[in-house]
Every structure is written in structure tokens, then in C-alpha cells.
Length: 263
Image 1 (cartoon, rainbow, N blue to C red):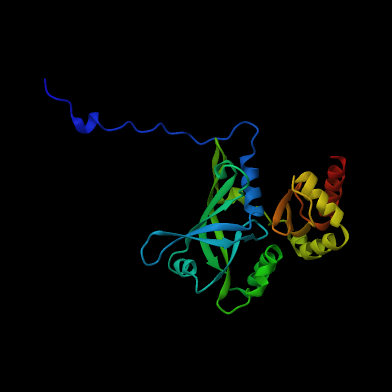
Image 2 (cartoon, helix red, strand yellow; image 1 turned 180 degrees about the vertical axis):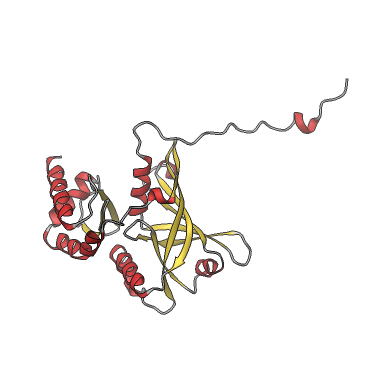
């Protein structure tokens, strides 16, 4: 009898694949979109233009009206030079927290980074970015700095153990095609909320968002919700119905304040 082929017999069995999936009742897409809006720092992965190896660096992140990630980067940075050679990139947005880091939700988004050179677009992106990350105003207008958008192609959510899902880029974004009236009124609406409705903003963050007490203020809004911050803390308030104009916004904010006070 011939001896068994040791190259086969001694090969360890491959581990069983664990299929991705979401438990019943878990809103994976909602969680992915929340992370996209709420997290202000991330690990940016680019392709090293010299070696071809992945290159990871820490960046600050804001979002455009539709949720597209916005970056402010120096031309002197290695990751910017990498993007000049190959625009493909990904960003890991991780919530973090106490205990096991892998038990907390995180989102990886993938796409192509595009530098914003059109003056009108750059002005809009600049305003959105600095509203979310005001300390960046110290260097935002230096000659070597520029604003970039990561045009999303895909996203991968890991919400913790047994909570994983893949999404197309378009699924993560907010449709703003019919919301021009709202976007035109955003700056005024945000300023009004921050000047006259501090109590309501605090209620949104603490009672609807589950965040700790703090001096919460609005930093931006879009048809799907409002972004808030208090120092290093951030919160995302999701609207119960889609908002496309100032009148709709007023009604929704009044209803949310009522819900928050009842909790």
C-alpha cells in the first residue's frame, strides 16, 4: 500500500468562514450613516507612491451636505503626495469607548479622493469643515493646505460581534437634489439654534442621542438630520421625516423638542 501524500494529509483544515450578517432589529445602514456623520477623526489609508504598500495616517474628517467625507490636508504630507499619484483611499471611522475596542462600532469607507479647486465648492466645503472642526481655522488657509472630498464607492460596517454589512457608496449618502431651499437656509438656521435654542440642542443630544450633559451646539444640518458638538463630543440627531425646506425643519425641530422633554 502506498503512503498517503503528506502534503495533503498534513495540511491543516481551513477555518470555517463566518458569513457577514446583522441580527434582527439592528439598523445597520442607520448605524453606518450615523458613524459617517458623527466621527471627526479617522485612519486614512493611501497607497504609497514609492513602495506600493498601504500607508495609514491620522486625519480629521467632516462631511458635506450629502455625507461625503471632507478632508483638509497639507501638500507636504505623505498621504497627500500618495493621493496625487493614486486617488484610491479608505478611511476607518471608529467610535471607540470603554472596554474591548473591538466591541464598539466602526465604519470603513472606500473611494477616490478629489481635491476641491472650484472656488464656490471650496468655499462651501471650507464652511462645513470649519463648523465641525473650528480649530482647523488656524491653518486652513495656509498656502500648502487644500480641501478634498472622498467620493464614496463602498462602505463596510462592523457594529461589534456578529454585526457586519457591506454597502454601496450611494446607500450611505443623503439625497440633496430636492433640498436646495434647506441648504440655502442652513447657516441662518444653525446660527438661530445656537443663539436662541441652546436648551433644545442639549435635549436633542442628551435625551434623544444618549450623550452626556454639555454645552451642545449645532454645527450643520441636512435633509436627514442635524450634527451637534460639545467640546470633544459629537452627536447626530436623525430627523423622523425627511426635511427639504425651512418650514419642514421648524416643524421637525419642534416635534423633536417635544419628544425629548417627554422622555
